Length: 326
Image (cartoon, rainbow, N blue to C red; front, top):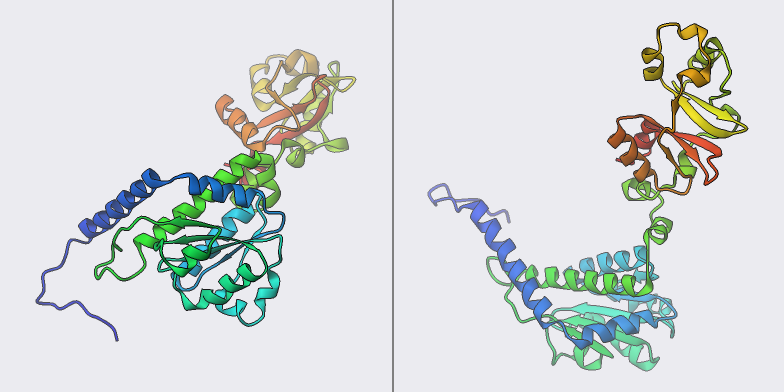
């Protein structure tokens, strides 16, 4: 059945309705933050002590929230996966072993589809954490640690559709994942291991992974004639030449340097035209830092050097942007 707006009824203010929902859910989140207690810290310790995996399960809207929580844990250093509660009763229970910890979600705490999972964890001594709105429920009473959502009304128009409760569950799952992540000392390098692709992964690329290096580098010596430098700049496609002595950086020649030295340019040597002490970066620096340096200095290339100022490579702004680093 499709419900249609009656033409003779005044239209509600949709913006006001939207703001009311967001404000109500924000207030519920503040309430949960204020009531967070030692049970949360205990749940974090249980997850930290898990030698196997964190297995998340729920049904309906709680299942959707559970999938996201499992994905967040997995991407922040805690091996985790989602098991559909109904499928668990038909063979997927075998995925769960003694070293695992289960995190079950149910607002009522009496979801029938979770009963087999609860019994399975109790029978084999598998640790059980729950997120529920009912402290007296079967789920809460049989859990090793029950995290109880505050008693707040669903914000939907009829007070029944999971809205506020799912927002609270999602936020509590995020809070658990971040607390565990911080306890583990999970850093950007770790994060990149789990996010090598997409925009997130690009933010953790190292300069050494993206720089040009080897025989293709546009290297010239200080006493090279400008005619040779121009030929190399034109042929290499980089638009710059790196001036080096025994591979030690001496300077860089760009289009701007050529324009500033037009008078008698062809009578000069590379070392006469080069910008000395150019901006440089190390190969282990993040590409995002290279982008910030280039944007801040209004340049499009950086020489990559080691601690001894030995030339390691060249990185271009264009390639950084093409890789998704912005």
